[in-house]
Length: 443
Image (cartoon, rainbow, N blue to C red; front, side):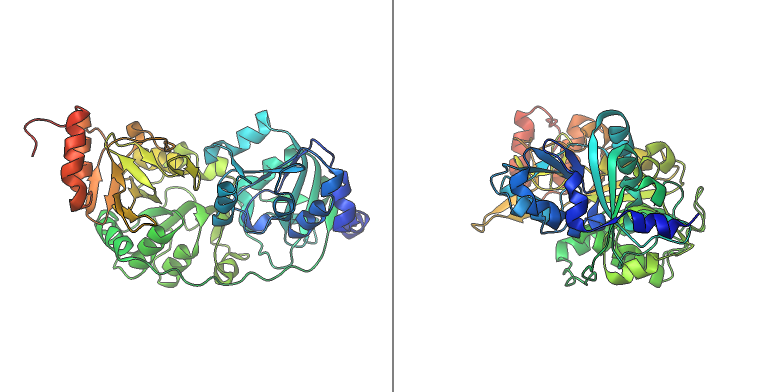
């Protein structure tokens, strides 16, 4: 077969390719670095010809031209599975709608329930066998393209090839159109300064991690702090099994800590669903035999996670109430992030032999008026509950770590108040008494 001849026959300009989109269609941009920059720009140019085009994305960087060109949402409606900082700002402007989800169910959502009229995805150049690798976004791509009535591949010459376990590529025979064009290279972002609170939380978690443990580390300052501390620690032979691979894992690898030597499954392989980070991270992932990318239906499946001994999950949240409920998605009714894989790894790490699941938060935040507030609250008031109290394991702040598994309502209140900021503890006790979750014999 002459795959390059088939490739050339399907080659279109971005403007030509997006002609397939009709009013009323569902269009999928897939995830993060798979954002179809050239196609997005071309579709935005068709604004006045289209109405009610619904677009799905996930962890997209800005700008999205289809959103920015239609601030009244008369033509395009944008929806996100998990908000990046850019998408969060869109939510604040009323220009993005969040779709509640659990990551390990993503394949099933598309297979059973969702329409995809057009899928647009950026992928590395085709190989000599006619395949486009899903690169940094194997976690969510395959089923989206399988369900799409039309598949358009935008070739991004800067994307790495990441080896996969399954569903890690699409063949030219399954692609309807291909577009080419120059893309800006990925750039380093300014390093985020780790706060004193984040450093202390990381120090509290470190004693719970043993040699040979396998790590799922989320995104943000807290996970970055844990990664740096682990890289500088005496721990050895750590493993990686994570939905999202960030530079924290590269630091562990460069420090000689990441060997995957003791994993029960995928031994000697670092497993990921997708990756977001620096050009150095992407270079490390490129065609690396020690890396395996899988769909999130595998990576995030609790039964798979639970097979790995000493599985340690480390995620962040916004606030926790005295019942032990966790909110990682909203501040009041203001949407901030998404549920992601927090529930998946809470359950998976809980059933792992020697496993532990940590949810981390600063004990306080300061509002725009300079007033200090507690992030451990009596009860939620409009916040979205990401993790129910029945599934929460360890909670960590800069004041310590507590375990809520199997704890009564009064034990939960007592333990959470013990790691709240001292300035708020007396007030939290009074509220716990009103809520009848404080024993009279307690302090």
